[in-house]
Length: 109
Image (cartoon, rainbow, N blue to C red; front, side, top):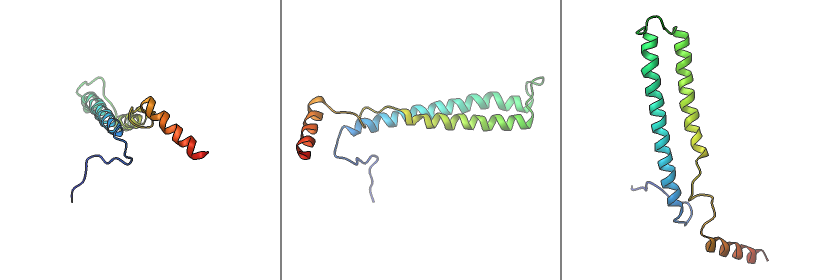
């Protein structure tokens, strides 16, 4: 059985632009989360292991900071909802939206 990578729910090809923007925003967010996790682990693991001896994290603080790091990554991923997409939920070309508005007005009358 074959399936598509993207399925358009409406017959508006401009939604492809929104799908591409969403995929790029998702990839950017994945890279942000990856770098956050790598940076945190680069600092926190040696600190918790005692490599920087005078500065040592207790296991409780290390566990709390790991939970905090996970929370930061999750909140950063949720910020993807704020992405504004040009192809979705916006007005189209001026002529197209006016024609659509005229047809809706005539249908109501």
